Amino acid sequence: MPDPVISVGFVGGGQMAEAIVGGMLGAKLCSPQGLWATDPVAARRDQLKTLFGIRVGEDNRALTEWADLVILAVKPQVLPGVLKEIGSFLAGKLVVSIVAGLPIRVIAERAPGVRGIIRAMPNQPVFVREGMTALTGGHAAPAADLSFVRAMFEAVGRVVEVDERLMDAVTGLSGSGPAYVFQAIEALADGGVKMGLPRRTADLLAAQTVFGAARMVLESREHPASLKDRVASPGGTTIAGLHRLEQGGFRATLMGAVEAATKRSEELGR
Image (cartoon, rainbow, N blue to C red):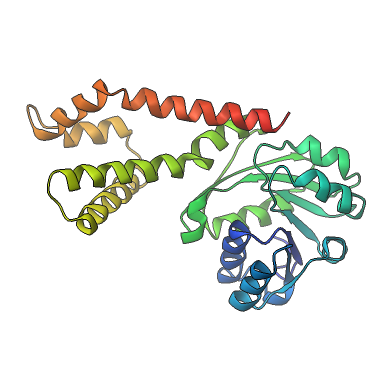
């Protein structure tokens, strides 16, 4: 693995960058002196400085010249302007993009001579270090660099490597998926309130139920259908509830949500 004092610059100091910085420092992959983040919003810069003691500023070019690894952590609509500003300064640098929907070729065309480009799609639970990140090193990223980047995202959750052609589907599933789960938790809790439970109790019951069920899938490595069948006793309460979900098109609706988000990610990359 590369030297842990590698200098890492975040172009964009939003909440995702904040979570990754916290994970890197917690895992001792970097020291605060080895991290620099830029952001146009003073409040974000102040927040990162206060929380982590890292270097902050507004000068993207200076950051790019300083850093060995440059992480592009901006909105898709902002990236073209950022690459116009710093593209010529990225030669010899390792670049990681967490910009949704934007393929590696878009960066490669505007940043000639980079050492390598890795595309990552982390999701919101990185904030509590339970994230899911997909990586693809489709632009000549050296193995040691990919190993360091993998460790960086493992500090905030789990990591899987996929072909870039699958990144839009990753965005539709795990990238957007937390929102689907939040809505499911809200609906479960609302159902509990409808049936007489206090709101705070219903929220806790719903959230912990989803958390526990997800952990069972991960740790048992059983198919979700098998775990479902273990809960659904013949003629019992669970099978009655599952029947109602089938009537409402629950599974088809979730599949459709993944499909719609995937297609939107594809549109952003065009």
